[in-house]
Amino acid sequence: MTAPAIETRDLTRFYGKHRGVEALDLTVHGGEVFGFLGPNGAGKSTTIRLLLDLIRPTRGTARVLGLDCQGQGLEVRRLVGYLPGEYRFYENLDGRRMLEYLGHVGGQVDPAVVASLAERLGADLQRPIRTLSHGNKQKLAIVQAFMHETPLLILDEPTTGLDPLVQQAFFALVEEARAAGRTVLLSSHNLGEVERVCDRFASVRQGRLVGVETMADLRDRAVRLVSLTAGRPLDAGVFAALPGIDDLVVDGLTLHCTVQGPLQPLLAAAAPYEVVDILSREPNLEEFFLALYGQREVRHEG
Amino acid sequence: MKGSIYLKTLVDLRGSVIMWSLGIAFIGAVNVLFFPTIQQMEGLVAFLDSMPPVIKAMIGDVSAMVRLDGFLHVKLFDPLPLLLAIFGISHGASLLAGELEHKHVDLLLARPVHRWRVVLAKFLAVATGVAIIAVALAATVVVCARIIGDELPWSHLVLGTLNALPLSWLFTALALLGSSLVTQPRPAAFAAGAVVVAGYVLETLRMMSPALAGWRTVSLFAYQKAGYPLVGAPDIGAVGLLLAVTVVLVTAACVSWERRDLAA
Ligand SMILES: Nc1ncnc2c1ncn2[C@@H]1O[C@H](COP(=O)(O)OP(=O)(O)OP(=O)(O)O)[C@@H](O)[C@H]1O
Ligand SMILES: [Mg+2]
Image (cartoon, rainbow over all chains, first blue to last red; front, side, top):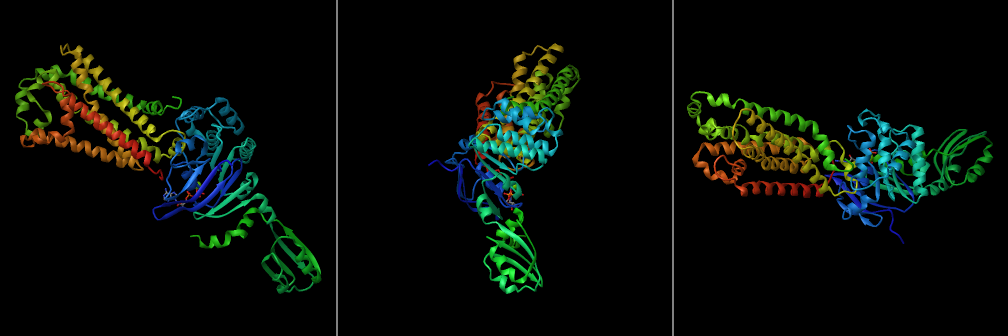
């Protein structure tokens, strides 16, 4: 069996007393597009910078494609294309010179690859970087991450500042990377974005791993938001006892709840009350996320 | 410039190197071109001799002031590392801490390059900048000496100027080491600057008082002067010592930057 693309064990990093990330056990398989999801300050960038040996763990280990991130940092970095969450270019250069410079620090790049990436993203390579807008700089950052055609891409909030069209072009690049058997780790605040491209995702909060989900799992365990209006007053007790029912609110003739699993038990229980109207919808991923493990964590925040 | 951190750093420094070369060349030219006027001043030596000991200590060998080599030693060659140190330290201090402060670090150091190579390349670039300024000064001094018709061998002028390099490099390396330890350039520059000033004060005090002759072994400026003295043979050992300390400092900076955790 080949080594996982990324494997962390008990990976922990404190900034003084402040927790960056703690006891992170994460495995990203080769060839998958893996989402790394969490709110501000969750520890995404901390984890990523540990993988690249820019910062050092308080304890625990991280391996990339079987190589130890701390002991074999140079070899690891040879295999990784990285888009930092926070960065500044050498602003006096134009895009082409900057990419040429970064591309040849310890490596080689094919100018044709750079040109093709720049064209697809609509990146301006001629103008001095300091005159570019935020989103246009982000395009260059994406180009520099992809240009080495490495087996692993680590992208820290890659879509910040990109307009929808460019985001589309970016996701197409990610799809192509997947098709080519490359692995992508992509951090994000945005569940919709993760849902769009990722095979699996891990969610982190306050430096801790909350869970790892596959997109298929997610759909199986899908929760539905149901609102029901009846012709006769509803008995809350009857509905509360049903399997998979949560967040139940019964108010005279109306009922609101979330349902996990099939709707049939709810419909059967409601039938005697002469159902007038029923509205059922899939929650968006944000609501799902919150229902799944959001509340408890959110309360602890601040 | 493809991928060469050395060339990239040097190119970034070019404006500063040009300004400094022009400025220092100007100082050199003024000193040499006005030397004949000063030389002809009546009672110059007597006047200088009447100065308080502090001033005399700063000037050095007063009687030598009436010859071009003596004059340049006192006015130009001996204090030159002080000037070059300003350039070396201001840029040396920002080499590493500046990358951090400006958040260039992630883009650069996430690439497959040893961090020590980055440190070395950047040091060599600033050291080259210092050398270019010194060479510009040496050339100016040689040309101006010909203009005033002085007979001094050009090698003396060139070596006198370039003798400032080892100590200037040492100060640059010191700022680089500081820079590898902190997250902002300023503390590194201040620390290195403090060493330069302390070293110069120490040397001045040493010159003033025979009682302090023993301080010679710890005075950096004394080693620099010994490298190309006005009288006597150059002390290659002193030059070697300054260079060796520089190498140690650069090595320490490399090690420190390799080990460094880059949490800003
Ligand atoms: N250099 C630092 N010094 C001190 N604390 C830090 C430092 N960098 C990060 N932290 C702390 O570590 C925690 C995790 O930060 P991190 O940058 O990894 O979060 P993130 O998930 O990338 O957030 P964002 O989505 O805002 O980019 C935060 O609480 C942050 O305050
Ligand atoms: Mg971040």
